[in-house]
Length: 86
Image (tube, rainbow, N blue to C red; front, side, top):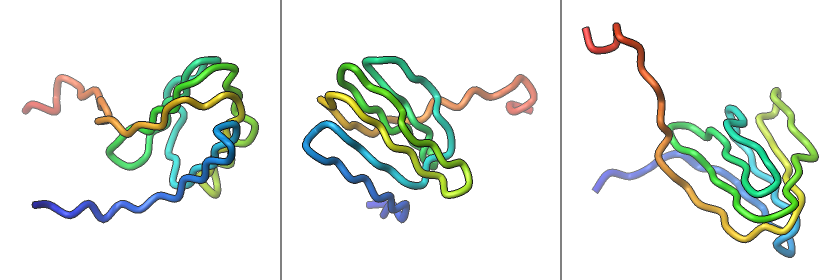
């Protein structure tokens, strides 16, 4: 079994407010989902009325407000160019 050494702090308060660190990039954002690039994974936040209220690229933190129904990790789909196969 391979141990995942990536550690991330996620704080969820009353299912209405979420803070996460080690965020590399916001990949997708609308009122029902926020998808964040974190390391080699994606952090997917699902719900309704979602708004990014804080994004700090230096500290790599994000804060999301709204009705949060799900917080899920998924594989990051990194597109590779034609020369990556050579």
